[in-house]
Amino acid sequence: PPPPRKPKSFVVNTETLGKEVMGYAGTTPLEIYIVDGKVDKIVPLKNNETPAFFQKVLDSPIFSSLQGKTVKEASEVQLDAVSGATWSSKAVIENIRLGLKEAAKKVK
View 1 (cartoon, rainbow, N blue to C red):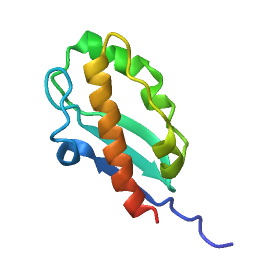
View 2 (tube, rainbow, N blue to C red):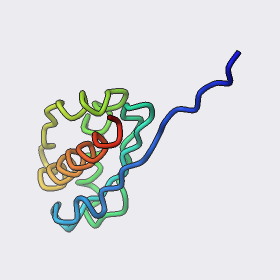
View 3 (cartoon, helix red, strand yellow):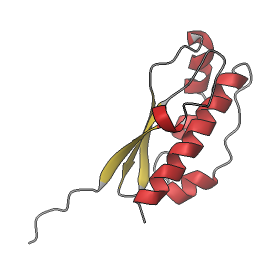
């Protein structure tokens, strides 16, 4: 039998893509992990958001709702800002949007 195929994977880092996207206390960069054209995970990078408020974003469905979706499907999901952490969540959502747009260029 042929050897198992390695999944095609890459990571989109939004530090540069989202450098203009501000949360409450600055930028909210992310890494979006893509495996075989699907969102594997989204990992927030170091930021200066208030930890208690940023935790609300982490606990919301923003990250988990995109897992397992193709880049195109994930791009079409309407993500809602998190009540009580509006600035942080809107910045994260914008970073996700920018990151998925970048990822879409690589999965064609």
